[in-house]
Amino acid sequence: MKLSPATNRTSAVTTRTRGEWAEHQALGFLRGQGLDLIARNYRTPGRGGGEIDLIMLAPDQTLVFVEVRQRRQGRQGGAAASVGHVKRRRIVLAARHFLLRCQPPPPCRFDVVAIEGDALHWIQAAFEAHQGL
Image 1 (cartoon, rainbow, N blue to C red):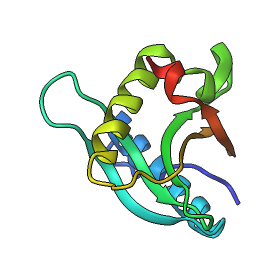
Image 2: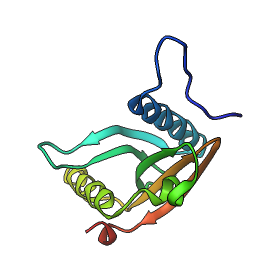
Image 3: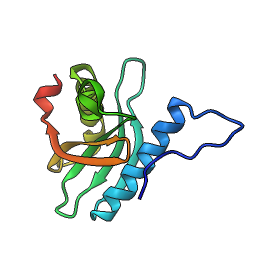
């Protein structure tokens, strides 16, 4: 199956459109792996906060915070490498905010779904919370 966002002749594909398409692809893939969607595009309130693309629940009841990254090609380290220190810190901040509503907090992990060209890569436990600080 070829992974590529739909386009038409009257409008160019925007970065936002590509991002939404990538999240849709990742969501479908993760659901196929047995994960359930808890939240999409979860944001902390206020400026400078974080955002989590997908929050999923794994079959073992692990809460999975998923960052979806899409690149046309694997240049400069590719999609997965684009989740740098600042991005990890914002994801961890948002995850901590989300976990305030969970008592007791469940086991959790941070995954990355990297889409490069036609390939989708699921990196489980891509980083630890302390790496985001």
